View 1 (cartoon, helix red, strand yellow):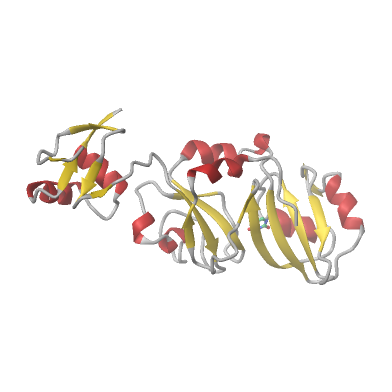
View 2: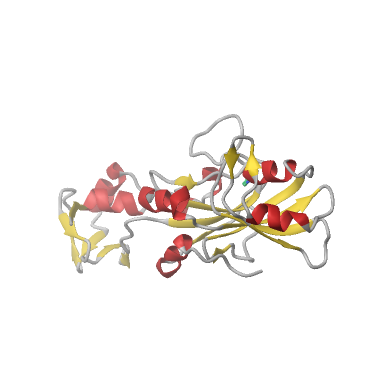
Length: 241
Ligand code: URA
């Protein structure tokens, strides 16, 4: 794949616009395979070593970011009246086309994948792919044993029937449980418990596929997901809790 150097640099370093790349080229700060280049229409290959001020710019086709979403943020790429999750991505990780793959409610916390890879997002979210999403749930009323079988056989939400979901009561807190669902209907978990005459008072997504939210991430913090971990987002096996 050949690409113009100005496009390459501005796509990999979002804080540098294409016109700023022209300035950097003019200042002889950009090299390809060790030789300074000055023309914005220089064409490069993915395998070429491009450097800015001697520091290599590693080409990444897509970016994958694990965000620990705090309550109060909306999962949308665009500004509305409420703060949006894209605002939480630090400058160095921002790119054009970055969006949250899947939605958590405004008051839900936890793992949101931010990416510019539409194909991965589609595969992760398509109900036919059955990718498990694991949540920690705190309830208004104590957990009841009957929930496990009702969720396992697929609870009905009005006309719709949910896919089988796996619930594990918390060993210490009788109001808490972990729930694994394999689809993402509107307010699904809240509606599942409402159908059982209970209510969700706190919800946090702990994992997508087999990839677990990093415990060191404070609410509002992000971490770039490394290549070897990206495929865990599509894994059919939820982690054990
Ligand atoms: N289910 C819900 O009800 N809300 C979420 O944010 C995610 C799953």
